[in-house]
Length: 190
Image (cartoon, rainbow, N blue to C red; front, side):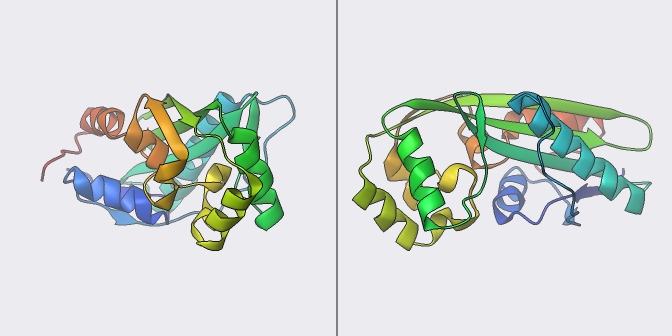
């Protein structure tokens, strides 16, 4: 059985993989995450997940590598991590009272094969005023989160409804990840 390496430093992805009993170690990679001109949100997350996995594979050629990327998308626009409080407030107000998509791509690669899959989840927010957005920013949680919120933490109170995979919104769609890993002979529940 090959070793599994998670090409990510995300504590949420580590927790999710551990939740399904997968044995792995982490080796984060640093890639350019700038969207290309005319790149769709789906193409963007798939490209980043695959580039992360492939970059890690160059360091560990005999392992199986899992790369992933998550983006919050509203009106076809990718919302990254906020650069400051005003950026976060602008993002949260853009999501306020409406539905947006969270796209998470997973790429599993080895020297012999590669598979990429994207999971799209619809998330509907409650209506937010500026004061509530600023209060949420002050908790510190939105600082490193795509779309300036974390559904698994304090940001859960911002979410009115989700349709799709909760774990994909957190950062790793577990059912799809388990299915892909099994194609590479990486067992779950170990």
